Length: 115
Length: 110
Image (tube, rainbow over all chains, first blue to last red; front, side):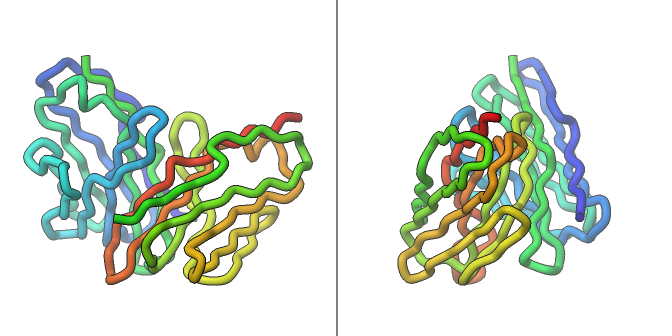
């Protein structure tokens, strides 16, 4: 089956620094990528949807200037958490969808801890 | 906004038992996904349903659009089925993003 690679798996950073998370589709063209956040014992929450070559669409309450999403190619999307703060500590996970809308593939997730 | 409710929240069963996890949602949808999340966080998509029933191995998923309800069944459960099972719905009208339930934490004991 299709594979979505997400890196890094975990990252610890100091408050005020920026962190970039990559999501790659390895064997298909991801026309749409989704970024989610999950706090402990909570549901996954959609942060933003990005289509290749266009600006991401952010969900209500998600700051687009803080969570920068770039989807420059059909195989790569990045999420940059800018000026991270401890409250940004969370599990971030991406998913990718190809031209066949039925199929949705998830990355392995990134655990972010901001000290 | 769609409200997605799953039950039970936690389920512990013995190996071999038949497992049922339920999902209800409040607003009409275009599709419903069942996902499996293992410790460490990785997520696998098990099914996408818009009507009827789907079967894959020991897993069966059903959906009743009129009642806004879906069930995930596991037959002959095994300890390796232990995971969090998540129901997620996609709204109609061409919307892309999913709304997730809180998940059902399943433990199958040998």
